[in-house]
Image (cartoon, rainbow, N blue to C red; front, side):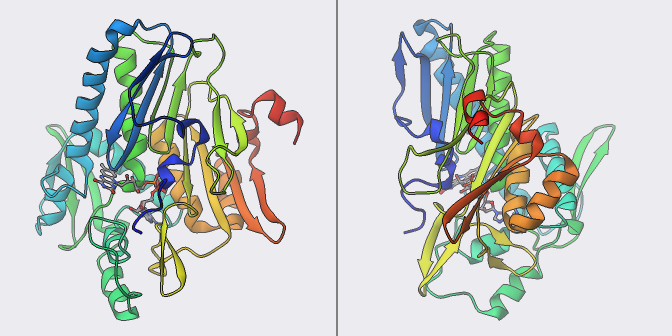
Length: 349
Ligand code: FAD
């Protein structure tokens, strides 16, 4: 099985129910949903009349299709795939949006000391989590070393010039994989679209990245739930009021497959070239943008519980970690995360 039935994209409990179909309800506000980037998008709106739904739905899908065409490594003709295929070390022109994503990725990459590394693509593909097929055997050390020789953030740079932004690599086989950032980027993009449409009360999400603003149809703050790391879909671990921020979760317990009797996670440690095996099962981050949250969560997953805690405290990040232990699971949150916790949940901790 390439991905478990519910991919990691569904880690945030709020998103689980009824994502496939477009729905409307007078009581719950307008809810639109659809598919993009191998996962699902969802937009919940308050105070928007039903007769706007078709026009909005079409604008949302078009925006996401454009992002997919820009960022996908699953589409051979995307802007990113063409950069990856070009064995050319001259600077290639890129859009301001692509420059923003890569600049943010390089920054988080540096601050996680390379744990989050968007050049990890050859390893992601080797382990069968990219567009290539899942391997029939555990990759050999020789194969892992060959893939590792093709990665490294130091080989990629964004160049800002008066006539625009450029992306340059100095390693011909460098393969940029923005799977860890794309959902957050697209979520922020949806939020900007809502603002352009004059909509001020919304919850937008793509996969495991969410951003909210204002209130829901009942006039209450949007509540986002972090799921418990179990196979039960709606078991809630904690609930937050995002207060206009973005949130993203990365986890190892839903997006995996079994190979040679081992559970293979989709999060790869660039240093070892191996899928992570430690006890940290999910990392949730709240940040100013969903893009930033989406970058940090994967880096923290690679680092494991103790290093992730230290980094969260050092960088003053709003982080919630769930770790597997002898008794089951334990959780930890940084002081910055606690500020977003709903009052009821906060009192019980
Ligand atoms: P996250 O934790 O946010 O990211 C994990 C992913 O990042 C891994 O799956 C891997 O790709 C990569 N990664 C692993 N280790 C690292 C590391 N150390 N540093 C940086 N990155 C790492 N999936 C499909 O099945 N079909 C598609 O057509 C498809 N199209 C996509 C198009 C786009 C533009 C994007 C962004 C993704 C697409 N995906 C597709 C992938 C998929 O939907 C998810 O984005 C992906 O599985 C990871 O998201 P996540 O939230 O589960 O995990």
